[in-house]
Length: 640
Image (tube, rainbow, N blue to C red; front, side, top):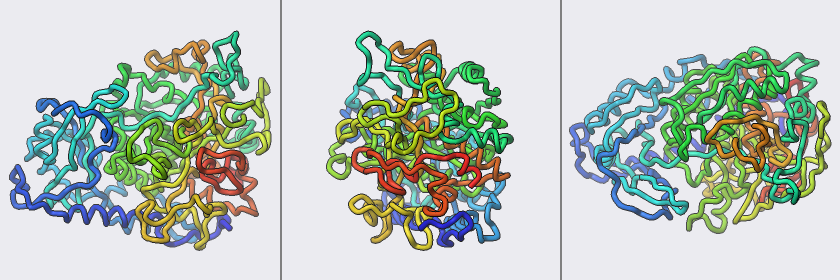
């Protein structure tokens, strides 16, 4: 049984065991002294230690083309560890315990860095290491991320590795380090990661469009219409609100997210004018947008600065659709690099202006640099202490999140993968449902032109699954993390949430590098319609984005988008509605969502999705990995 909202949460510090594991691994690795002389003054008397897992697995099957140019200019980042980690965990436990004197007494801007950031001596030691290696420091306002530039030969010498060129199976050329990096042992306990040693795009967008391949008419190149959007391109804002019961929030409670600041995490340029067209089309107020560039903002991908514009614009438009009264929407944007991704999350946390954030970009855990994962974790922990909510798309490849990537290590049970950052413990992972049958089957529910439809019932809403197999899959991400242990919000009073323990599916112990008996983190947490066939009308005309200029599904700029990318911004906007009704930030919403009692109120706040599955994991009664707790009844979530 899950506790009611006013029942005491466990006082055991959340996520303590995963943190202890990470610290233990890093400590052991940093004690593996190689007793080699350093190449510069600060390390002549200090032996070297190896930073484990600092070679990207993305190049395991790539063709080695030769040594990278020694004169190429590179930008690298040193990730510094937070101090007093046990205190951070105890603080978070208190902040989310209704019976604690610190309950919802969020840290204010600057407090987290002052209490837990690296000391001035630790920062100075790391800076000295970089400068004595001949690298030039780049100004950074983030205390846990030092950025520097230099030639590839300087980087190789500094980190005792080599940089080589690779050609991947799809013909793309990249550079990457060939061996794990080594650091002076005097930085032990300070530097926990090195970013920027390769130039592959760090993460990908989780958007999908309905190309109509399973249902096109021979007489029309377009997929059949759905919903009330222009040209049948998808659900309108009022239809979304009607289906998921936000109308009553907007009208009866007069709650449209007034006074709340929303934010989106992005890695691409976009057309701001498209947002105004969307707002005008659906008679929405113009929510002020503020662009926040991190490390100079996005860089071209596949030859275009706007290659991912469709993702940016759908994130913004869907947040506005659900919370049209928001005070401001911050559009954070950075290069799609390891440094850019981590720096952007850390900047959002440092600014502490966004009450609720969505991120629809990610990568399977197996492919992610462990240094980047730790950097994200530190940012999300800071957000949790400040009461910031953040929701992430769970991925669009079902239970096989590394598709279409192939590697000799991704066979058998290793084919089961989940998406980062949705699998992170201090984030809410959003999965996808559908109003049609699996594998692009017949549509079960279509509101047509009805501007205010109601929820059609759980017999019409199932897991989004377009024929998921180990070789090809489009569907709701979800499964068991291989990097994190089970957070305390997934259990109350020592009992797992209903449905969490699934024979044959739940994992523990070594599966996620925990001690025996410790369950692994399961995602997703919550879900919403994510099937592009029953998806959302989005306006995008940005040149350079292949989805925003494709006559196969784009009609005068209107596109029907889906994917779990659409769920993350909608859930972030729901968080803004909850915050407004609450009169302040609620923070990490997993503590809010999982706390509803399954018999006393659970069915009021969520629609329990029991149909279909995501390839390996089935949907079922109460919690399940493809759809989490379920899809929302927003009125009862906002006013339980």
